[in-house]
Image (cartoon, rainbow, N blue to C red):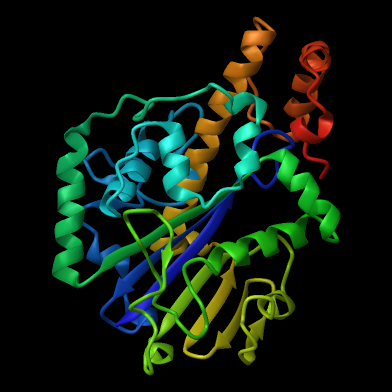
Length: 337
């Protein structure tokens, strides 16, 4: 048995709305480096965004979702994965509660107070049950199990506080990502699974004299221009030895015990990373829907925003008077970097 873990984020560049980081973990029967989940799930998922054969679209979320395409494909894949994991969220808050350990302070975000979205939001039907059933059958036939989907949802208030603790935004992203990884993996107990009843990590049953021999492959999309991760890995390695295998522009690789960690450009070529990208983008888009609804209530007619720098500055000007009236400080609204 092995463990395949993928991690990706959505919303790193914007000034408005949350950064969302997601990790997905899969138990596989083969050495993880030899397991091809794309082949295992070929009858259920496709990387071809033009395909209309009833399969779920699973690739880089930037391809699955555009304003022109709409949210339905992104939502279908994200919710199917949640249900494959044993969760069936019916609202935005329910989804976030199931995915994120969460900082209680996030619940005080102005746009989230007394706000809710029913799911599915884009109008997909629960006749998608058939797709989830086929996916579950594929898992059983191939000896694969989705053991975790976890997210960090970081709104500007917390992001700005973390920035003050770290040297820059790249440092903040890397530390957040590795802390999230630590929720589904540890160097001495790699097979951590989650308790489906409470959504928290369950380490019992995973420890043992041979736990460290379980092979683990962790793949994450590279964080911009960062090539060196060993200093950050020390913070989550529990004192285990870190072996640097390779550091370069395209890929940086490390070994900790029986675990190999890869930070690579185009990480979404690995299915666990692609799914992490999909879930992150889905949560981010729903969050921005609530964000825009909140401001439209206080500034009728204001044009919605996706939060990216140029349009975010326009939006900030448009809502400035309402922001002052509502006494919402810049540190809550605007990411400093």
